[in-house]
Length: 339
Image 1 (cartoon, helix red, strand yellow):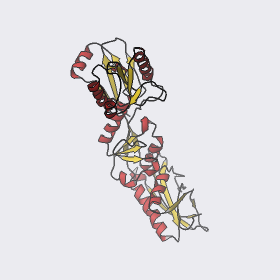
Image 2: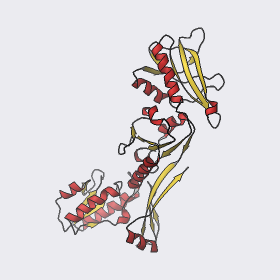
Image 3: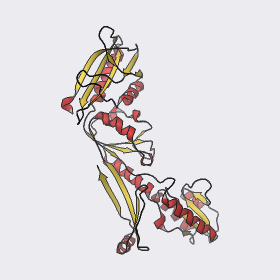
Image 4: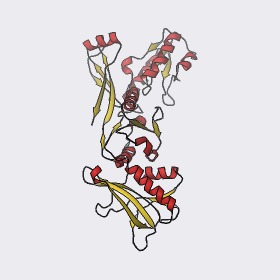
């Protein structure tokens, strides 16, 4: 890539005085380069106090009133990728800002690994919802008050709580109370609440732990693993992590990426970070590696195998492994990277 980098400074037309123009341009030999970082560059210039507009930049001779600063390179398939900023030819501050923006962003070009955390948090339609609803109905039929750890949908019978403090404030019959963990609630967070419930209500009953949904727990683990093993992590719409938080791909800042080889990407519920990946693809060749974490619950109670993939949950029924796992109080966790 580095050997194919080419820089241009050419006259253009249609530039408004006092305004910078960010947009596509035609290279004399390479045609029109792809320009995926256009919105991010424009946002950087606006944060610096410049007025910016997006439009195609046309080379001109006799009617030229601006200067285009541009740079491009050829990707692995020989296709041009570039960036261009233009300013009015009498706007000295604008010309300096346009040239500096092109130098700064093109200076970030290098080969990188992009590591999105894969998987997804549990949502409507999760197969565990049906199981938990059936358990709630069973508890209700035998006269129990059901405590639901998590956020069930409106209209769901039972008392929903989300913290140990709420568990301490419950007013229920201690001899007729049960609890379930609603699918989508982080299992590690539920453990503290369960401990509080069992302290207050020693006779409390629960749904079988095979019914727990680990999708959200697994995605959070994948997100944390991604953040801990990459040079930087961009969290797009995911405020639960101490990383560079974004609400739009245009908010990427060039200073975050200086000298960075690996970029972790975290999105809400493991959604497709296509917009973010597109912007990053304009900063040099990328290898995208999805990082996953999955939990398998092994039980000797049944011989059949059940796998739930709406997230990264899999429950496997098997015999002798269960005894060893139960003694150690662990569940096997598989971590893998797939290109």
